[in-house]
Image (cartoon, rainbow, N blue to C red; front, top):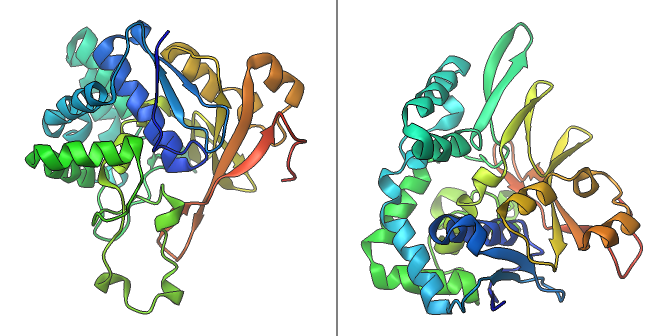
Length: 316
């Protein structure tokens, strides 16, 4: 079957893995879940591959993604709340209950999104809403509010949107946009103690469309209560620190199989078994730890290799 390599997206980076999955998720919605499959190239930096029954050109993919962004500002994921982490458990339950009134298709779509934003968790005798680890917003940032503004900015200039999508998907990433990456891109993290100027005086540097595509991947990481917090699919918890884990495989899979791969204990465990990886067609497993650069700023570290087929498992 024809395949299209997304040469600008690095699979060995947290934002790259998220953006790749976001592209695949949108393509599956638009084209139909059974008509698009996903795999990774075998060579570093492990670029994503879209496999389709008929050839899919770069231009057709960009046009598809641009059209999907057109109505994003009014869609459920960007209108249900502005600052999710400010919600109470009761607020969150009320929003979740409303998804039942949206019909079969709309309710399923909304439910997939709302569980990606967090879950209720026990806090002593009480319950609180605990946001997804992907929500690293602080100070003036809002989540998902900032993404509603990002969708609006992308939609306002069709030519710039096309260029931004091309940069994000086929590279190279130039980091010319005044766009924060929500801590998902380790290369954009600023260690403020070593910065020559105050953070408020320096602009963010990012790739707008890459950040947007990463956001589109969130429904693939539903949140589940764990102790006093939440742990989404694809995350592990080591010494009270969450870690995003993802596999690299070369056999094209559909959406259902991809979700299963992301949730495998083989992927999230401390030391993946190489023999089992080989049996499942997994060539490597990456992990990115969620940590802090300051009291409030949270980010995902540069990915490390947990295991790969051509070498022994790397030490923790």
